[in-house]
Structure formats: C-alpha cells, structure tokens
Image (cartoon, rainbow, N blue to C red; front, side, top):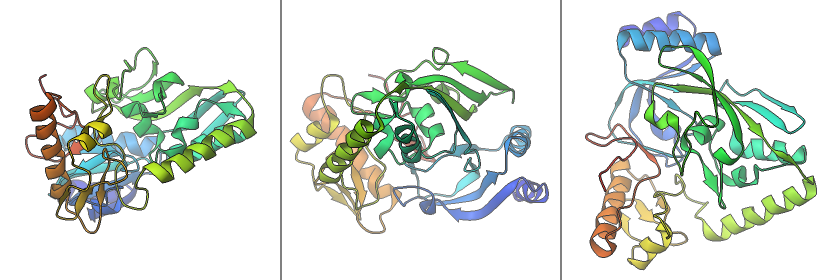
Amino acid sequence: MQDVIKEIIALHLGKVLINEKLSNHTTYRVGGKARCICIPKGIDELLTLLKIIKERKIKHIILGNGSNVLFSDEIYDGIVIKLDNFNKISINNNIIVVGAGYPLIRLSNDAMRNSLKGMEFMGGIPGTVGGAVFMNAGAYGEDTASIIQSVKIINSDLDIVELSKDDMKYSYRTSLLQDHLDFVCLEATFKLTKGNSEEIANIMKERREQRKLSQPLNYPSAGSVFRNPSGMYAGKLIEDMGLKGFTVGKAMVSMKHANFIINIGNAKASDIKKIIDTIKIKALSKYNVRLHVEQRLINWVGVSEKDKEED
C-alpha cells in the first residue's frame, strides 16, 4: 500500500492525504483513519488513479460530502477518492449539467436563481450531486430520479459512458450504482421546469424553517438513518418504541426527530452502530418490521454497505 501511495504522489494526480481522520470528512464526525485520501485534479488523473487501483486490486470508495455514510472506527486500508474538483456546472434553458462533486444546496439555489422548479427538495440535503445520483436522494415526496435525464459514469472497464434515467434503475433510495460499486459518477444532467424564482425561494425558505423546527441541525448527524417502511414513517415507529433520547456513549437518538442519530460529543462510530442495531432488533421484535439502514455502512466486518438482508 505504501508503494502505491508513493506512486500516486509521484504522478501528481492531485491532493493526497495520508493516514487522514475520516471524522474530518463525514457529517457524523466519526470514523477511523484512511490510509490514503486522494482528490484527483480532473478526469485524466482520476482514470489513472482508477487504473492503478484496478491493477493492484486495492480497496477503494468514492466519498462525497460524507453526509450519508457511517465509517467504522477501524483503519480504512484502502484509497478514499473525493471528487471535489468535479464541480463544473452549465445551465441552458431548463437543462442543468453538473459535476458529481457539486454541493446539492448550492445547486438548488442556482436553480432557484434561474427560475427553475424541481430542485427545491435538495435545499436541505448536505450532500453532493454524485451522492444524490447514487442514493436517489429525496425529500418531501420528491427524489433525484424525478428530475434526472442522464448520468455520465466511468464503468468497470474504465470507459466513460452515459446512462439514461431508465438505465439507472431508480427506485426508493436505490440506483444501479449501488449494485456496481466500481462505477464512478462523473456528472449528471437534470431536466427542470420553468417557474417563478420568488415562489421557488419562498418554498425553500418555508422548508428551511420546518427543518430548523423538526431536525437536530445543531449536532453532527448523517440525516435519516432508516428508510421508511411501506406505509409508515421510521421516525414515528422509533418514537413509539420510546427510543427518543436513547443514548450509547456520546451518540443519541434525537429528541427532535427519532430517525436521526446525533453525535453529542466525540462519539465513536461504534456508539452509533450500537444504537442502529438496537433499533432494528426492537422494531423486528415489537412490530415485526425489518428496518433497513438508508446510510452506507463502510468498513464494518461482516456488514454490507447496502445493508442487504433477507426479509
């Protein structure tokens, strides 16, 4: 691994962080160290990096803003790739083409200023375009799939290809990319509708106020922990089980919104994971409901990132 890191540095592929704390790169503010975090300068550098990774069979992951992930406390013995430099945007009438590293909150504001409707739901999601494409991020009954037109990716053969909305196989909080973790989202094309910028701004403002009242924005978290089971809300189910305020170490189920776990002061990733496991066990025991984690669980022994379980 050390030889590979030296090679990456020598090739000047971009910024390289060695033995970097993942807590500096996730919104939970937890996680062990990564052997290497690389931020490629551009597409050529990214392709070179992916070629090295493929040839050496090195573990790797693409990380956006770290807003929907839970890394373990252990060392991530691989390469974390951040696409911060893939942040170009073009707006032509009602079409937006934007890089994977572009922040969603900024994107929703860009759409609003251009009188484009459809991205209001992104106004409170602290992630990136790539993460939204990967997770089919959504809120207020809307999601990324509802506005996506196409996605440009690097596939497992390191070819750059464009996938249509149908190709992406979108459904609730899932996409084709979750079944192909070696694919890399480069950019997305969104098709919006014309609207009134003032009306759009008012909707976004109202939702910001709602989030302040209903979500624990003053503590580190990673957004909603569980997917909503069919016909019910995960937060309501957790609240009904009396788990608001349930604490392990320095992690706690939010008193404001039970589907949020918050870091109330130097929590460990294992504290958060214990709360997740406790909630899942109790939901299954009390209501016979199998809750599925919406967040990606990374670098946990015996745990799939997709939280795959047999119903």
